[in-house]
Length: 263
Image (cartoon, rainbow, N blue to C red; front, top):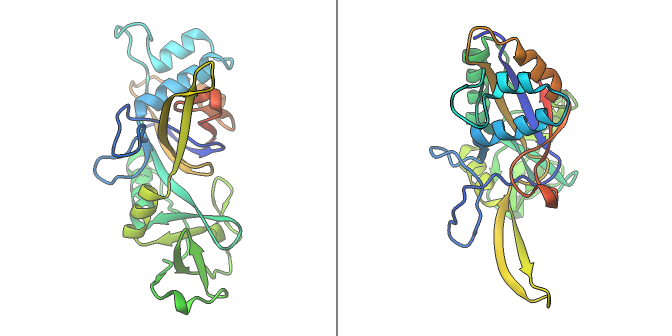
C-alpha cells in the first residue's frame, strides 16, 4: 500500500489511555490488547489525539477533514487509516543506569512482519541476544548480571552496544527477555497513581487509582491511505514528525506527552 508510514511515540510523561471500566483494585486501567495483554492505545484514541494536534498546529481545516474525516457526522470518511499504538520498548528499573528497556522476541518478530507486509520494506530490530533469567540470587555477579525490576538477568555484552536501534535508543540499553517475563513486566510493572478530589474543606470526596504507562515507554503505529489518492499523508507526516503530541487522558496533569518520530 503506497504512501503509508511508520512512526514511534516516546512517552515524555506517563500515558493514560483508559478503558473506562475498573478491574480489581485499579479504578482506571489502561487499554490492552485482548490476545496478548500488552499495553496499547486504540487507533480511535490515537486518531483523535492527532486530529486535535493538527487542528491547532498549522494544518488547514480542509486538510484536517481530508485526512481525519468530518468530525460532526459520518458523511465524510477520512483518507487515512490509523492503527493501534503497540508496545515496542518497555522501561523498567535497573541496577545499571537507572533504567533499561525490555522487549520480547514476539514483539521483534511482529514488528518485522508488519514492516514487510504493510510497508513492503525489510529490516528488523537489531537487539542483543536473549538475556537469561538467573533464578538463584546467590549467583549474582555485578560484572555479568543486571537487575531488572526485582529479577536478575544476564547482562548485554556486545561490541557494538552503542549502536542506535531506533528513535536514538542504544543497543546496550535494550534487553531481549523471555516472553513470559516480558508479559509479566508489562502487566505488573506499569505505574499505579492515586488521585484524590478534595472539597472546599480539604476533605476527600473521591479517591481513585489509575494505571499509566511510565515515561520512556516507546510505542509504534502505522498510518496508511484508505483511498487511492491521499497526498495529504505527506502533510500529516510533516506536521507530526519530531513534535510533542498529547495522547490519552489527564492532559491538565501533564499526562501523555509523546515525541513522534516518523521512520
